[in-house]
Length: 350
Image 1 (cartoon, rainbow, N blue to C red):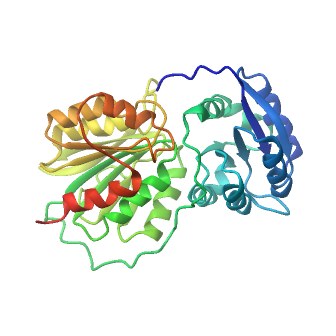
Image 2: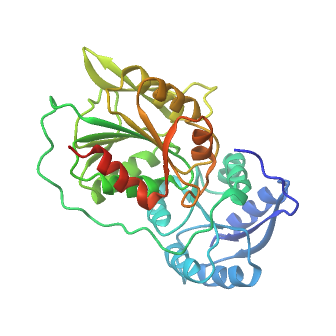
């Protein structure tokens, strides 16, 4: 993804009930070139008023606040003045983050500890996400619907070959991944997801999907077998690959190298799959910042897999799909509402 040429600074509104948190976040952002803090709010009510008065480019949001919590704030904001929202949350509230993403937040930053030290630790990540705002599609105010699906009959025996679907995503990815998976319900597929996400959050993401979908969803573990009716989410902070062990297609989980730009890496997953994936494999590149996956889609195409990408019209950030499309190997580019149903038709038995 190309860097934006910013003539005006990115205007940030901070919404956080902690006075020390507001101060720490303000100090952190004020020294970051190209970013301007235009307002601070101590609760959701004040934050909503300032959002309407100041028209910020982006809002950083705490979720647990008095008077009006972050979820109500998101619902009302999207109905009145859609603005990209980045949630700043502690590791203690993983499940809360995914609820916020379903309600329209575009991304989150996991603060490792309370106090100013926690913000300093995520400074580079937060600043990078704020600077990606010029690339973001404005939220449309329609939260994704989280609905529990009735689980079908037990999946076919492991011996039956599963059609393999690989998904890579980053910013805006969790709701997009869920939407695609909802369309694949009941099909004899195994889906492997590489979603850029910190360690410990991927387990909560997998648990949330498992509660909402007909698939059995889990965080991937080393040695897991590719089988129909399963969805595996790559563990945050680690690398996930596919390999053949004793003539059986399995998952390999390994430690990330210090030089890895992403963990999990879409490129690592896709490139490994190109060596062992069965005929009829599909790969999707969904919304995300950067170009992770562009090297892997080339390898998959050479191996005979079919690569699709999310269209710019629905992608929160078009960086990853755009980079994949730029390789020339993407066969179909579809908006998110069309992507899942089209894939389901392609995977359905003739």
